[in-house]
Length: 186
Image (cartoon, rainbow, N blue to C red; front, side):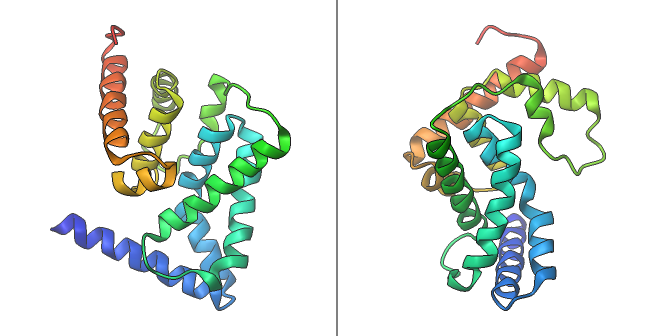
C-alpha cells in the first residue's frame, strides 16, 4: 500500500514537471533532468553500447521533451513516455550510424551514480556483474532498478510479452546473484 502511494506521488511529481515544461518553465526541465537522466542514459547505453553516443542521445531526449511536453497526456507513466522517447532516439541514432558496436567494459562506469554510498569498488563489481547479462536482461534490470518501471511498463517499452520480461528479469537476478557470490556456473 505504501509503495503504491509512493509510486503515485512520484508519478504525480513527474507529471507536474512535464506540465511546467509545457508552460515553458526551464527550472522544471532542469529538475526533470536531474531526476531522470540516469534512467534515460542507462537505456540509451544499453541500446547504443557506446558511452559518447548515449550521452548525446540523453541530451537529445531532453531537447525532445522540451519540444513535445505540450503534447504529453497523463494517461500512463510519465517515465515510460520519457523512456519511449529515449528508445526511439537511440534507435534513430543506430539507423543513422548504420552500426551496432560492442560496449566496452569501462563504458558501464559512465552510468551516472548520484548515490554517494556507491564506491568505485562497488561500481566495478556491479559493472562486472552486469557484463554477464544478455542485452535484454541488462535492459530489463536497468529499467526496473534505475528507472523504477514496472515489468508491464518495461514490456511495453521493449515491445516484449510481459512473461518474457518477467522471465528475463528473474533469470538476470539469478545470474547477478551467482556472479556476486562468486559462483559462475550459470
